[in-house]
Length: 206
Picture 1 (cartoon, rainbow, N blue to C red):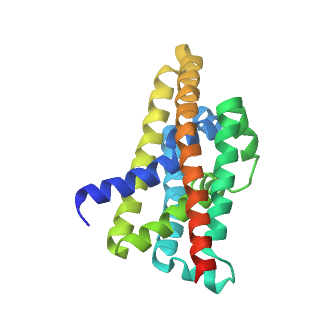
Picture 2: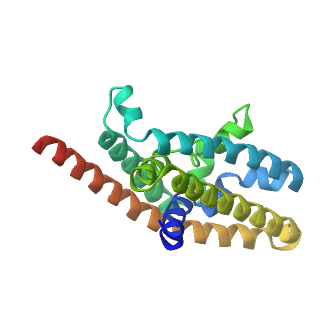
Protein backbone atom coordinates (compact mmCIF):
# COMPACT_ATOMS: atom_id res chain seq x y z
CA UNK A 1 0.00 0.00 0.00
CA UNK A 2 1.48 3.36 -1.02
CA UNK A 3 0.77 6.87 0.21
CA UNK A 4 -1.76 7.46 -2.57
CA UNK A 5 -3.78 4.39 -1.53
CA UNK A 6 -3.57 5.49 2.10
CA UNK A 7 -4.89 8.95 1.28
CA UNK A 8 -7.62 7.55 -0.98
CA UNK A 9 -8.87 5.19 1.75
CA UNK A 10 -8.60 7.91 4.40
CA UNK A 11 -10.55 10.39 2.27
CA UNK A 12 -13.39 7.90 1.79
CA UNK A 13 -13.79 7.36 5.53
CA UNK A 14 -13.32 11.08 6.18
CA UNK A 15 -16.12 11.95 3.76
CA UNK A 16 -18.38 9.37 5.37
CA UNK A 17 -17.60 10.89 8.77
CA UNK A 18 -18.44 14.29 7.21
CA UNK A 19 -17.32 16.80 9.87
CA UNK A 20 -19.42 19.51 8.19
CA UNK A 21 -22.53 17.40 8.68
CA UNK A 22 -21.48 16.60 12.25
CA UNK A 23 -21.02 20.31 12.94
CA UNK A 24 -24.72 20.80 12.23
CA UNK A 25 -25.54 17.82 14.42
CA UNK A 26 -23.41 19.27 17.22
CA UNK A 27 -24.31 22.92 16.74
CA UNK A 28 -25.91 23.23 20.17
CA UNK A 29 -22.69 21.94 21.77
CA UNK A 30 -20.54 24.19 19.59
CA UNK A 31 -22.61 27.18 20.71
CA UNK A 32 -22.74 26.35 24.44
CA UNK A 33 -19.41 24.67 25.28
CA UNK A 34 -16.08 26.33 25.84
CA UNK A 35 -13.39 25.35 23.33
CA UNK A 36 -11.35 23.24 25.76
CA UNK A 37 -14.35 21.30 27.04
CA UNK A 38 -15.63 20.70 23.53
CA UNK A 39 -12.17 19.47 22.43
CA UNK A 40 -11.96 16.97 25.31
CA UNK A 41 -15.45 15.59 24.69
CA UNK A 42 -14.77 15.33 20.96
CA UNK A 43 -11.43 13.60 21.58
CA UNK A 44 -13.03 10.93 23.76
CA UNK A 45 -15.76 10.39 21.17
CA UNK A 46 -13.17 10.07 18.41
CA UNK A 47 -11.19 7.50 20.39
CA UNK A 48 -14.35 5.44 20.93
CA UNK A 49 -15.15 5.54 17.23
CA UNK A 50 -11.55 4.74 16.18
CA UNK A 51 -11.51 1.71 18.48
CA UNK A 52 -14.74 0.36 17.00
CA UNK A 53 -13.49 0.94 13.45
CA UNK A 54 -10.22 -0.86 14.25
CA UNK A 55 -12.12 -3.87 15.62
CA UNK A 56 -14.18 -4.15 12.44
CA UNK A 57 -11.12 -3.63 10.24
CA UNK A 58 -9.36 -6.45 12.09
CA UNK A 59 -12.31 -8.83 12.40
CA UNK A 60 -13.84 -8.02 9.03
CA UNK A 61 -16.71 -10.12 7.80
CA UNK A 62 -15.95 -12.80 10.41
CA UNK A 63 -17.67 -10.63 13.00
CA UNK A 64 -20.91 -10.92 11.05
CA UNK A 65 -20.45 -14.68 10.69
CA UNK A 66 -20.15 -15.00 14.47
CA UNK A 67 -23.41 -13.14 15.05
CA UNK A 68 -25.15 -15.11 12.30
CA UNK A 69 -25.64 -12.40 9.68
CA UNK A 70 -24.17 -11.58 6.27
CA UNK A 71 -21.91 -8.63 5.66
CA UNK A 72 -23.88 -7.97 2.47
CA UNK A 73 -27.06 -7.49 4.53
CA UNK A 74 -25.31 -5.04 6.83
CA UNK A 75 -23.82 -3.21 3.84
CA UNK A 76 -27.26 -2.99 2.21
CA UNK A 77 -28.85 -1.70 5.43
CA UNK A 78 -26.08 0.85 5.85
CA UNK A 79 -26.60 2.07 2.30
CA UNK A 80 -30.33 2.49 2.85
CA UNK A 81 -29.84 4.37 6.15
CA UNK A 82 -27.27 6.75 4.69
CA UNK A 83 -29.42 7.27 1.60
CA UNK A 84 -32.38 8.26 3.77
CA UNK A 85 -30.22 10.63 5.83
CA UNK A 86 -28.73 12.18 2.69
CA UNK A 87 -32.16 12.68 1.10
CA UNK A 88 -33.57 14.24 4.27
CA UNK A 89 -30.62 16.59 4.59
CA UNK A 90 -30.75 17.68 0.94
CA UNK A 91 -34.42 18.63 1.25
CA UNK A 92 -34.71 19.74 4.88
CA UNK A 93 -31.21 20.93 5.79
CA UNK A 94 -29.90 21.00 9.35
CA UNK A 95 -33.34 20.50 10.92
CA UNK A 96 -33.28 16.91 9.66
CA UNK A 97 -30.13 16.21 11.69
CA UNK A 98 -30.80 18.16 14.88
CA UNK A 99 -33.94 16.15 15.57
CA UNK A 100 -31.94 12.89 15.53
CA UNK A 101 -29.63 13.80 18.39
CA UNK A 102 -32.04 14.03 21.31
CA UNK A 103 -30.74 14.70 24.82
CA UNK A 104 -28.65 11.69 25.89
CA UNK A 105 -27.00 11.64 29.30
CA UNK A 106 -23.58 10.67 27.96
CA UNK A 107 -22.41 13.26 25.45
CA UNK A 108 -19.51 11.19 24.14
CA UNK A 109 -21.84 8.35 23.22
CA UNK A 110 -24.26 10.68 21.50
CA UNK A 111 -21.45 12.11 19.38
CA UNK A 112 -20.04 8.69 18.51
CA UNK A 113 -23.47 7.42 17.49
CA UNK A 114 -24.93 7.57 14.95
CA UNK A 115 -22.75 9.82 12.80
CA UNK A 116 -19.29 8.54 13.71
CA UNK A 117 -20.13 4.91 14.29
CA UNK A 118 -22.76 4.12 11.70
CA UNK A 119 -23.45 1.50 9.04
CA UNK A 120 -21.53 3.46 6.44
CA UNK A 121 -18.34 4.02 8.45
CA UNK A 122 -18.37 0.49 9.90
CA UNK A 123 -18.80 -0.94 6.40
CA UNK A 124 -15.95 1.23 5.16
CA UNK A 125 -13.76 -0.07 8.01
CA UNK A 126 -14.52 -3.66 7.03
CA UNK A 127 -13.69 -2.89 3.41
CA UNK A 128 -10.41 -1.29 4.53
CA UNK A 129 -9.52 -4.45 6.45
CA UNK A 130 -10.33 -6.59 3.41
CA UNK A 131 -8.21 -4.52 1.03
CA UNK A 132 -5.18 -3.72 3.17
CA UNK A 133 -3.15 -5.04 6.09
CA UNK A 134 -4.37 -4.17 9.57
CA UNK A 135 -1.43 -1.79 10.10
CA UNK A 136 -2.31 0.22 7.00
CA UNK A 137 -6.04 0.04 7.72
CA UNK A 138 -5.51 1.29 11.26
CA UNK A 139 -3.26 4.09 9.98
CA UNK A 140 -5.95 5.08 7.49
CA UNK A 141 -8.55 5.12 10.27
CA UNK A 142 -6.35 7.30 12.47
CA UNK A 143 -5.70 9.74 9.60
CA UNK A 144 -9.45 9.99 8.90
CA UNK A 145 -10.36 10.45 12.56
CA UNK A 146 -7.63 13.06 13.03
CA UNK A 147 -8.86 14.95 9.97
CA UNK A 148 -12.45 14.93 11.23
CA UNK A 149 -11.35 15.90 14.76
CA UNK A 150 -9.24 18.85 13.57
CA UNK A 151 -11.94 19.98 11.14
CA UNK A 152 -14.55 20.12 13.89
CA UNK A 153 -12.17 21.99 16.19
CA UNK A 154 -11.44 24.47 13.39
CA UNK A 155 -15.17 25.01 12.83
CA UNK A 156 -15.65 25.52 16.57
CA UNK A 157 -12.77 28.02 16.67
CA UNK A 158 -14.12 29.99 13.71
CA UNK A 159 -17.63 29.97 15.15
CA UNK A 160 -16.35 31.33 18.48
CA UNK A 161 -14.54 34.13 16.65
CA UNK A 162 -17.47 35.35 14.62
CA UNK A 163 -20.52 34.15 16.56
CA UNK A 164 -21.40 37.60 17.92
CA UNK A 165 -21.74 39.28 14.53
CA UNK A 166 -21.85 36.54 11.92
CA UNK A 167 -23.30 33.46 13.63
CA UNK A 168 -26.21 33.21 11.20
CA UNK A 169 -23.87 33.50 8.24
CA UNK A 170 -21.63 30.72 9.58
CA UNK A 171 -24.60 28.45 10.22
CA UNK A 172 -25.89 29.13 6.72
CA UNK A 173 -22.50 28.40 5.20
CA UNK A 174 -22.20 25.11 7.09
CA UNK A 175 -25.73 24.21 6.07
CA UNK A 176 -24.94 24.77 2.39
CA UNK A 177 -21.70 22.78 2.58
CA UNK A 178 -23.57 20.04 4.44
CA UNK A 179 -26.15 19.82 1.66
CA UNK A 180 -23.40 19.50 -0.93
CA UNK A 181 -21.73 16.81 1.18
CA UNK A 182 -25.07 15.02 1.47
CA UNK A 183 -25.12 14.65 -2.31
CA UNK A 184 -21.87 12.73 -2.15
CA UNK A 185 -23.06 10.69 0.82
CA UNK A 186 -26.16 9.71 -1.15
CA UNK A 187 -23.97 8.63 -4.08
CA UNK A 188 -21.80 6.53 -1.76
CA UNK A 189 -24.96 5.04 -0.25
CA UNK A 190 -26.14 3.89 -3.68
CA UNK A 191 -22.71 2.38 -4.31
CA UNK A 192 -22.95 0.50 -0.98
CA UNK A 193 -26.31 -0.94 -2.03
CA UNK A 194 -24.88 -2.02 -5.40
CA UNK A 195 -21.93 -3.68 -3.65
CA UNK A 196 -24.30 -5.52 -1.31
CA UNK A 197 -26.37 -6.78 -4.23
CA UNK A 198 -23.18 -7.92 -5.98
CA UNK A 199 -22.08 -9.84 -2.89
CA UNK A 200 -25.51 -11.45 -2.55
CA UNK A 201 -25.43 -12.44 -6.24
CA UNK A 202 -22.02 -14.04 -5.80
CA UNK A 203 -23.26 -15.98 -2.74
CA UNK A 204 -26.29 -17.17 -4.73
CA UNK A 205 -24.14 -18.36 -7.64
CA UNK A 206 -21.79 -20.38 -5.42
